Length: 170
Image (tube, rainbow, N blue to C red; front, top):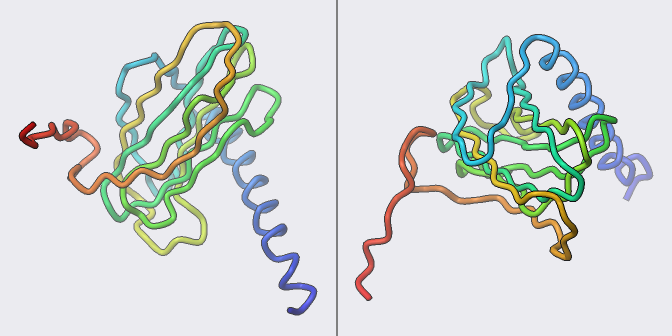
């Protein structure tokens, strides 16, 4: 394997982090949106607004989970960062199945940022609607480890569709 091929993933990851920070700062300056736990937020990725940034103010030791669902064909990346710009969690829907989530993230006390933007390197739609829902537990210590998962949501036809109910006989 050529030497430059070995460094390509590192360069790509570094470029993604730089892009994330720039997008977060630019978009956050344009409009600030606050997350309320348990409340669904409908967002829109547009060509002139390729990233959507939301804030959540956490207490010490708070654990946080966030899920984003979208129309199939819109591959998204979800990141959670603290006020200092430290990446706390990230997940990417690389197959454009319509969902991505991060679970059991220990947040930094104070303002934290959730950013949603089109996945880099995935050939899919780059504009479309999504729905974001966050859940959390108040301050206190936790022994649970963060879980990052891409969620297949084939039954959802739009980000505003209700979650399908289980109709399986028991």
